[in-house]
Image 1: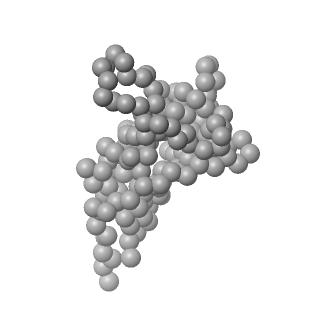
Image 2: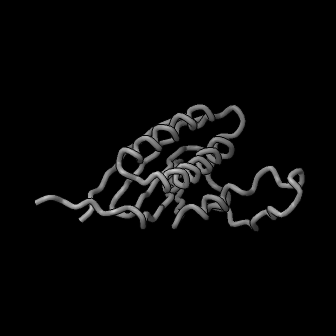
Image 3: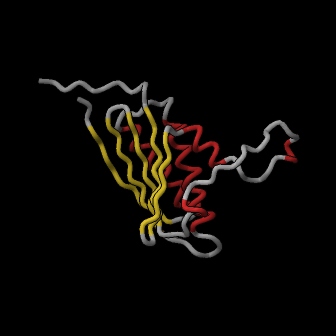
Length: 152
């Protein structure tokens, strides 16, 4: 039976604080044994989600706190982002047509790739709004993570 590890990080919904939180997340996951080849994808998906929170949940001069809960168990990682910013439109992550990457660089849209990237890097995304709180769960399967054996 694999062991379970949980930890919580907090940051302001501001670019500099997000960068620091991502560094702390990467360090914590690395110490728990998440493989070096999985870390970049997890970090990128969480970075995209956090940047969406900064840009859209707390627009303009408004800011707030973001709690990052991580639970690593066996071959599964769940990262939950919790904030009190504006809810996602329509109560769910957007499902949009993927922008065409086969155009001239200057013709690429400024945004629109983030949610596609998050979807590509995760196995499951779950969003709920309870009262004034947003909860975005990013689930990652870790097929390359060996189960730690318990010693008798």
